[in-house]
Length: 552
Image 1 (tube, one colour):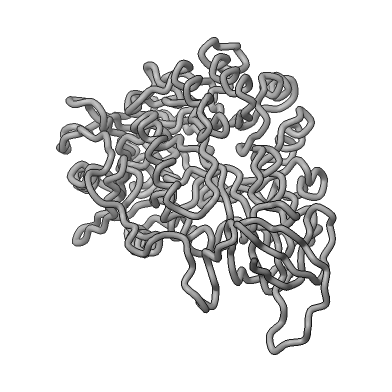
Image 2: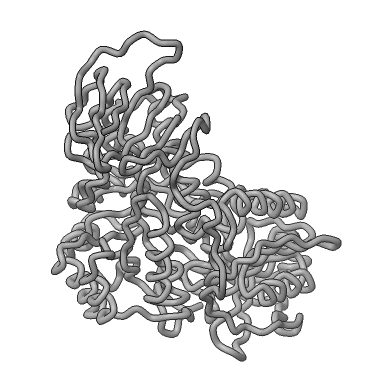
């Protein structure tokens, strides 16, 4: 029998009191009220841990058990994880890999079945795998699958597409929730989308969208990730509808992740004056209720899973994290946490799907001349949305049109799954690369190779390095190259989280040196390939008008 004393933050009764948790067999057997004796150090606040309500672990480039090591240091005790990225590369094999890796950690993972593998497919893009309605039905029947991942094919939902409908029904018939993904949907269409059985959405980016979502009975997951940041516009929902709001990062880059996680959103909300109980409802409680998980809310009989913090101000510090009775993080390192074996590294042959061959400059040549009507992807830092610039050339846009050389550049997407495939070349503005190129095999959602650069020579060099590594991220300049190999599905590295973060910081510093000032250039580039987000995107097959969903 163990116990811990402190100021207990009871999120169920909205009460803070001095007390003691009595713990036995990984559970809280009693919550006592008692006076706290005066001591040299102040008593901690004991509270439920934070939950990321929608995350693609692959975006951290860490395998799940390494992701857990970083997450617990920020007070995160569990995540609702959609293995959508690796699913698009390896199918069900990829989902199983994530579940197996997560099982090595003392952490709460709830994995879902990715609903859109591929996101669009058909003649639009090439993925490495297909997970059809039959496969979804088999996944939904499994105990280790907790929900159906984000239903990105919202046109298919609204049109009553049979394959889409069968996937949703497979989840509902097994009593498992369905996550949504429907940017811009309001009014009657939002109500129709919700009526199909979809109960969350993390793609709301305006207050009107969020309110429409809640009005339709769906919960809004406020996202504050590395590239997409919606907290500023959506945060009033925390006060308006605290029971209908959850928090997430969605896609969190490793150098951001090592600095903070859901705790940063909580701090920001407290600094903005939102009620403590409303904030903790969104950060700690709602995900457990929505996904029917009993990870711990500091009640007698709950798992002994909680965090301790030094204060309840916006400047709080997570001092320790305890999961099922074992301390897995201690800020002061007064004892060695028990999360994973220290030598728990990935070894052996990594699962991957990569057959692309090196390319030459001739493979990405495009013929542009005066009078041509061209379509340019206009990217914006901090947003997944793009603007569609359509112009008639008065000259070559890469040299002498109204856009200077550094403003309009080539973007290349190269199919990595089929031998003999040819790169697709488009035009993009907003990255402002002056002298170099960036490339990666993280390209949502099919994860083909994508590259942007200031010359064909740089682009080819960057892409061929990705091919050589069988996946990764790379930046090249006239006299330097830096990269991160990602041999696990072309998405993750067999390294510790801090090592990945350090190498990411080095790469980002070099990206700045070649002129790009975006905060998360690789994530922003990755979303240039996702044809379910407006207004214009590029895949390994086509340039797409994604607002009207037609090939350009």
